[in-house]
Length: 112
Length: 114
Image (cartoon, rainbow over all chains, first blue to last red; front, side, top):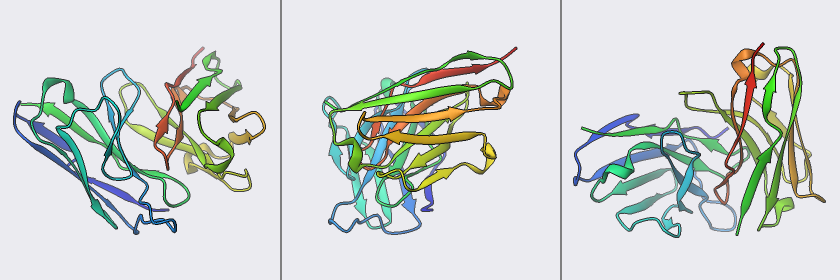
């Protein structure tokens, strides 16, 4: 199975400051159709996970533009340009390129 | 709009059985592998099981030791998880997930308790 490794696992941030989460895969996530099926999710306490970004960098409807995704191959990054209070929670990267789909361990973002 | 809607959760006694369902809509269900992922109270996500788009390949977490069976009915756009010999530690919210497109259901709570 493809191993997804996130870092850091805990990320204390100051409101208004940027934040960055890394996600690395043990194999390239480029599929035979040329797409890279790497998605980012955010889970607030007590809620189900919500997709933020799909295929590396495409923001879902309603996701603020302070969230951005980048990367290729095996290295990916989620960036928050200016952290707001509502951004706390756990962020997961998930790959759907290879069977079976696999998940990162999650990065817990909290306000300092 | 893509939707994954889980159902079938509830309270069950240790040793009991339960079948979860996940009804999919808004995408061509038969062309995607789908998975079950669970989250115990206050804990992180745990992979449970997955099934290929045609149902011919399945995967289970080692910890389940044959107690769970995943299946799908593409004619009904539905994913299933048959759970047996349930234990207290199986208590969790169970989510249906499609990982390529990144679709996630709202979850169904399974509580195993006497």
